[in-house]
Length: 257
Image (cartoon, rainbow, N blue to C red):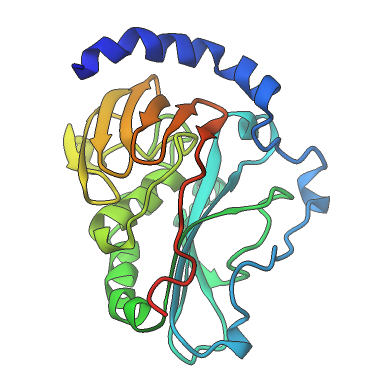
């Protein structure tokens, strides 16, 4: 089947996305004020003081307020071998209004709730493999081209950053959910790039219109920044605002140990 024949289906899915969100759940965003929202660990990451090996992890969690019905925020967490703390690398948009870099690297809890919303673990690499990839991950963080600018929709935003890290280090095998709005905004405005997982291609017009085809992603169609698709490798329907409906994406926890 030619990819453009999926466009009518994608339009329907984009229109029905909010209804599927209500019907199938999709993790609802936390409703308490941000000042009171939990930032506690969910207990997925190994405790740094008890785990000497290197770690690289990537997380996604529903964003704060009404945006959480449509999108997730993503970040990268790293720990060098023997380090007493994790470093969390992410883009935070409100810093732009203060004249600060939106790209942040600081010691933090890697698997913390994001304004009350529990994160999903997308990548988990540990041990010798993590130690080998860590310098390239840190270099990718520093090479992000939009460290001083942020646009919530269609990008560049926090998901544009995480996708950039994935493309620079495809060995991570990063597959971002369709709810990671901004992942399809390709740096430099170029129309074609590899997928973050490294085994596919993306065609994108400034993150507003495009198509992705990859071994790990399946087929995704992006219209106005919202994506829908089909995962053939791990059969699932991917809906805007909802995410996956079907087989849960497999993740080899602690890969490299």
